[in-house]
Amino acid sequence: MADSPPVISKARAIVDIIISDIAAGRLKSGDRLPSERALASKYDISLGTVQRAMQVLAQRGAITREHGRGSFVRGLGASIDTRYLRFRDAKDRNLPLYWHLIDWHVGTAADGVAQFFGAACAIVCIERWVDVDGRFALLSKLFLRRKDFDALFRDDEPRDDTNLRELISQRLSLPTMRIEQRMAFEPLDADVGRFIGSRAGAKGFMLELRGYTVRDRPLSLQRIYGALFSELTLVVDVKVI
Image 1 (cartoon, rainbow, N blue to C red):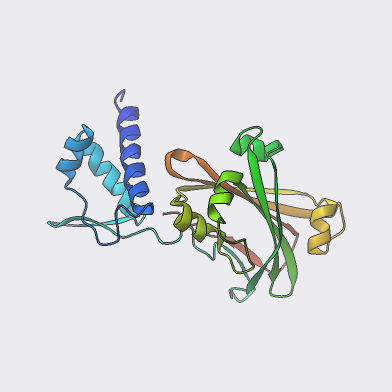
Image 2: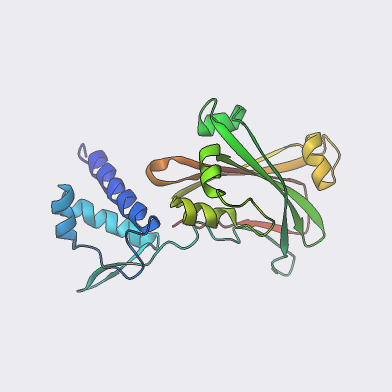
């Protein structure tokens, strides 16, 4: 039992190395990975540790394992399903969501954002208004490190149709490896109420999605605010690689 933590740690390191190589384009879809014995020799680890890492990669969809042939790269695609947030009506039909950019601004991380990114970290907040089938609205706030934002939008700026999570994965080679979901029910402040058509202090909800990349580095924090609703089901489906 005493050997388990080091084995898990080494397997995680191999997973991170291969995911990083795929995200950066050093490994492409269809490429064949070195044999498990070759990987064990290269990284000076046991064959069992390599097999554990390959199993994790296969479960995440990053590789396919073919008996007698080896392991092949499948690629990453978008880090998270673009339809991760959905509302369904009483007949289990998905309602259309329309995302509209409000603004983005630079600031310094504070409160819960600082706990996630680190105190005094320069961050950018991208605010978007979400129309749920014309029935009601949500407010989305996505926080990124400023250096990541600057690298992401070197030559352009966020737009209504920008899929931010796909851009983060493709342009920054930073796939989302893990998501933490948190839900809170709290009074809406005036800033949120103004955008979603609710009075300040009205009861509402806040859904928080904390995204982590390779080596469990904090990558993005998204907060989605809305008023309480009825006769609909909220589905949160965050599929990480």
